[in-house]
Amino acid sequence: MISNGTKAKISASFAVLSWSTVATAFKLALEHLTHFELLLIASSTSLLIFAMILTFQHRWKSLISIDIAQYGYFALLGLLNPVLYYLILFKSYSLLPAQIAQPINYMWPIFLTVFLAIFTHRSIPNRKYLGLIISLGGVIIISIGSTKIGNFNLSGIGIFFAALSAVLWSVYWMVTNRNKGKIDANVALFLCFLFGTLYLLIMACFIGIHTLTTVGVLSGMYVGCFEMGIPFVAFGYAISKTDNPALINQMCYLSPFISLFFISVILHEPIVMTTYLGLGMIIAGIVFNQYATKS
Image (cartoon, rainbow, N blue to C red; front, side):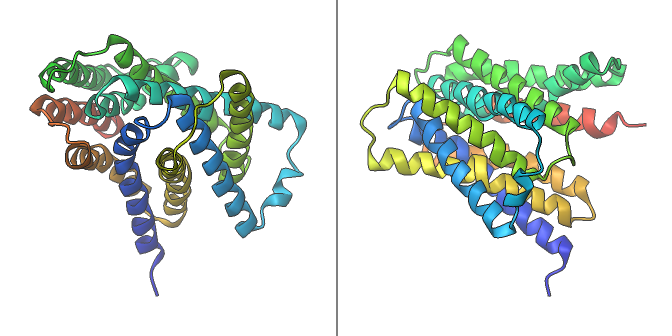
């Protein structure tokens, strides 16, 4: 019989591997879809996945116990994620090489540190400023090094959108963490994507969509499955089964490095040394602030 610890590691490994492929999947999908069309297909796919999970877990009755105020909360949360967050994230990928957009988006724990200090009125320990500076230095190095990627001209707007996506994800994490445990995690994801998909369908009536190709639809569905849907459920399962949550969380730090392998092999982007150095600095700053500054 497989132990809970082994199940947790297998599940977390699946989630990490899935997230490692999505930067490449974003770029491939955006060759056939606009960033809005990609999100519409991906969000609809994720909604279907979460609906199937609720059916399998017999959780539909949980929706009855949710009051109007909580539905209003998820209506607003769905506007943040998936709508605003992924529209901005996909737009950044359409403007930047994957090896630039992905590490900058991964800076969200740095923004989270700042926001928690602001909104919880807790000062940032002096030692944590070192971690912030290290991570920000990594972003600068990545941005400078991007000029060596072929004949690519760095998009300032693309970098802004990548950083803004990290800001939005940190806000989403902070908001959802305050309500953690009040509602089942899979029910919460279903409601977020239910409202988010409804918003996107309404927007489609005004924006319109182009003629969709089979490749475009399948690539959008892949993003919905392996970025927004299944990995979050798998990672949540891993956390619930493990007796060492720190190890499971640390496994996530492998994802951006594995992602560079897929970016290089599949997208044929020449990975410059500054990308490795900058990404290493971003992760080092996050890890330093998360562990080295604890009393």
